[in-house]
Image 1 (tube, rainbow, N blue to C red):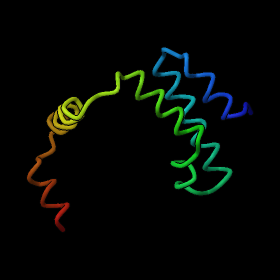
Image 2 (cartoon, helix red, strand yellow):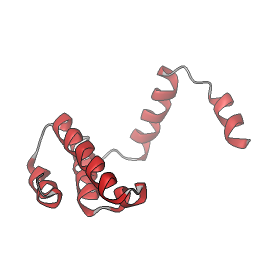
Image 3 (cartoon, rainbow, N blue to C red):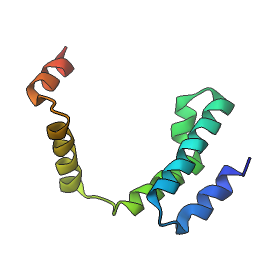
Image 4 (spheres, rainbow, N blue to C red):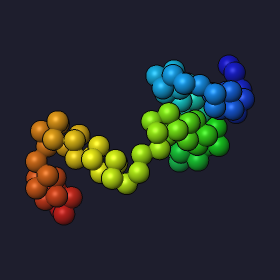
Length: 90
């Protein structure tokens, strides 16, 4: 299996979001298998670097773009925002 830290560095020149996400997925599974810890997956330096590359490939959205994406997902998922708020309040 390739060294995930070298892979994280190698993908910094990538331009194919789908390929980077695929590598990230495999790397997450590798770390999870090694550690049995989702916290370790979230804190792994190679994974952090890969996630940063994904953020770069989608153009590092600002707060407004993130809010618009969130609202669009709710709209297209046909989720009632009031129902969602009521669930989160318990």
